[in-house]
Amino acid sequence: MIAELILCTSLTAVDGDTVKCDGQNMRLLGEGVPFVSGIDTPEIGSHAKCVKERKLALIAKGRLKELLAEKGLRIDWSGAVDRTQSHRPLVNIYRANGEEIGKKLLQEGFARAWSPKHRNDWCD
Image (cartoon, rainbow, N blue to C red; front, side, top):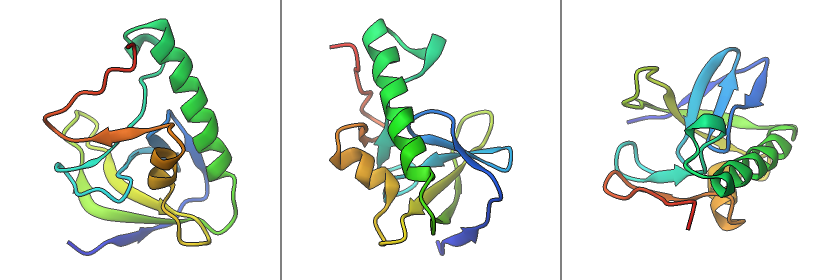
């Protein structure tokens, strides 16, 4: 699959691994491979399984929001959409220095590796 560049006039953080580009939700891959690997962040609000997860989710969202405020971001669509009802495009967002934002969240501890056979527990 060849990545396709996406242009947004408005880019906001929905949670730690989902962004909204001009009203469309998109899921961060973190340089992963669609349906094989990616990143996962804690669930926000009523989707959280415990208070700890809810708090971690707000922190992860805040960090993503900071990164999205930078100038010179590039959004690459993998060509795939997730398997949820909303069919969010699976994307990578790169900073001006070439660093991928999802990978940065992993390195900083705001995200964890995701795979289809592994569910992260944020409450432990």
